[in-house]
Image (cartoon, rainbow, N blue to C red; front, top):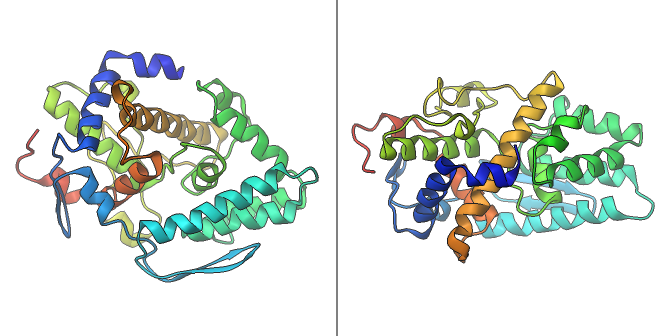
Length: 295
């Protein structure tokens, strides 16, 4: 599907209008969570806090400490440095693959998803084979297109809750599509469909993901597992392509909501929307199970 085709769909237009109203505050969301209720999406942004415990990010330029429950400003300072660093490393005339690997690992450290397996092992392998720069160039070229054809043609694509963090710092207006952001976006579509009294159209059924830990699995990360099914972004390349497809649609729809009717909602950018969704998606249990939803 092309971006223009996706955004011009009548149901997409209606949801974008709904989402935009939620962003500018003219529509309440009344999102219930363990700490209370977010009347508006801006309330979720206001309570942004990460990481859950103190983190030390080992960037090539030196260690960066991030206290537990740091706010958006402190996190953005780290992310700006990581973004500048990995972009600079990728555009060098002679790429230092070790440096590129180190920036990538630092990003995963910030996201709390760096382990000796999975993405961490894959990055090490690609770096040893001196293939990381070529891969990132091909992947980012596919991910910044205004269609889904590029990612479908990339037979070695790696797209999951970890690598989306790396891509988000390599590309402008590319949101992190992890289990929490996916859950919140699905909840907003779910709520919009209730408001419209319609079934959720197939092209807006954002796929969801389970959390990584046993403790997190007890938290609800989909508003309706039949409509917004859980997927696994690992294994065959088709699973990675599917994750990337919904990441692209999330990028497109968030930008469309921010720029609805040609007027940018100045308080918002894609990173802030992502941060608000991240907080909402931590657990949907109370938001889904509340007795009544004011639409």
